[in-house]
Amino acid sequence: MNGTEEFGHLFSDGDLTQMVERIDVNGDMCIDIDEFSELYQTIMDSKDEEENMKGAFNVFDRNGDGYISVDKLRSVLESMGLKQGKAMEDCKRMITKVDLDGDGRVNFMEFKQMMKGGGFSVMA
Image 1 (cartoon, one colour):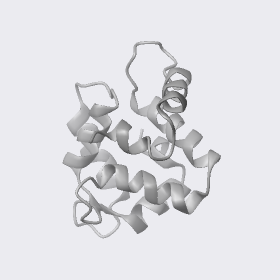
Image 2 (cartoon, one colour):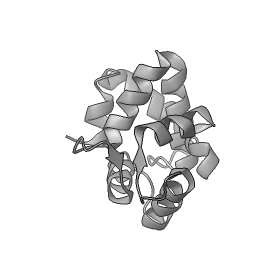
Image 3 (cartoon, helix red, strand yellow):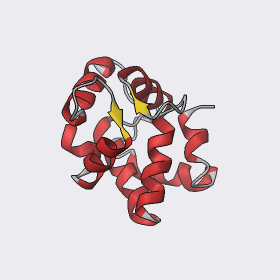
């Protein structure tokens, strides 16, 4: 199951496609980190916050171990069309900025704090 299939549990394929088309500002058919942040904010604004945070966290926590690692983050963002290039470097930077306990991964509490503090845009 890829990241878009997991987001589909919250939204229909049509709704998700519309959001992505609206968010892909430069029209390159890829979502960069700024565009992804906008997409996430759209999701957060549309439904119950706690439930959506858990759903979004679960998209990244693909194996259900309760943590988002650099590899998990990279995999999901790439499956959503995040531009290649500095992807791994960007993912490491993103994890480092929100990893409050320094264990190299993000737990749900750290994820919630990050989202309440402005989401992925704080890491761009």
